Amino acid sequence: MFVAHAMQHYPSAWGHYDVCKSQIYTEEGLAWDYMACQPEATDMTKYLRVALDPPNITCGDPPETYCALENPYMCNNECDATTEELAHPPELMFDFEGRNPTTFWQSTSWKKYPKPLQVNITLSWNKTIELTDDIILTFESGRPEQMVLEKSLDYGRTWTPYQFYATDCLDAFTMEPKTVNDLTQRTLLDIICTEDYSRGYVWKNDKTVRFEIKDRFALFAGPRLHNMASLYGQLDTTKNLRDFFTITDLRIRLLKPATGATMVDENNLSRYFYAISDIKVQGRCKCNLHANSCVFDKGKLGCECEHNTTGPDCSRCKRHYHGRAWSVGSYLPIPKGTANICTYFYSYRFKDCPCDSFNVHYTAKMSHIRQRCEAPIYLRESTLLLSRYWNCSRVCDNAMLRCQNGGTCHHHQRCHCSPGFTGVLCERASCQGPGDCDDQLSGRASPQTLGLNSRP
Image: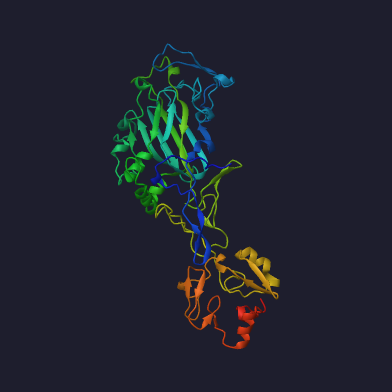
């Protein structure tokens, strides 16, 4: 099952990076043009696992009757885990909205008051994902008077706060209240407490609680996100900023339910509970700009890696492709970015990559070469000829002087030889004697003429 399949209608300046490579014609022939790439953003709630702590906090066992917060005498809401129409399990936080009546998860009531009614809701992907839009929680009950949104980057082993929410930030968390509009480019990573989403029953028609991702993007990209190059530049060069929008898990800590008044009515505790009808988490698989699709297979997300990379996040080079150190792709320059592909590691020893030295005999090593170098193979008089050797990555390198006798390396694919020298690495003097030249012109090339030894 593919996670990335629907285009998101953002401004063109977003730069979708939805293609990893394309074929182009160069003076050397047909070759690959590699680009930075990433999966499209999608609804990530389809791929998560949810866990509640305490695990028995969901209502309905035993059955309960609930009263409305704004009207303590209207007590006609039932919760019964044994009856499908009256049950409110956790998966109803992520089902399709628009049905009537609304479906939602609901906690037990505050029947153990004054002991705190607290719930941890943990969302886990078992995969690193990047957030691309606001996190939105829709409450069917009143919005919590105290709440914390937390994130993990190490699969739930450690947690850091994303944002605090309270009717009174100073009283609840000893923090001055702020909003996302108070943030600047320099303070974007600050953890704030906001009072905007914690009002009581008077504001019952406003049911959502947000963590504003796009407003934070806008600090670099402008109010309508038209200058994404500025944001991409910051993401490329500032690891802390990149990590801020990256998660493996989210945790919603519900610390105090809506009470609608300064005092809790101890004679009617069935008025106080949590109920969530919808959670939205928009994002994409983190593939380090080395994949344009992500697959959900056997209950697990994984990037479809390109650029000779591998791993769930394309975070390392494939075997035999350590010609240079792995690196994350770059968004810049827009619109294609920089792929930073992993390249083949080779040496002049036969066992590493025989494409480099062409010092191979066909009868012994044909299958080995196909596997290692993926180069077309042509046969003539039991001698292996490797043509179109640009299929082998990094045949030459000026920095390591692999082109001999004054030759220079061209695009890591061929050596431009000095006058008087020839061969793949300019290792031989140009033919002077009539015998060798006759062999070449007649098509009966000897191993010595081709730069090949007669033995492996």
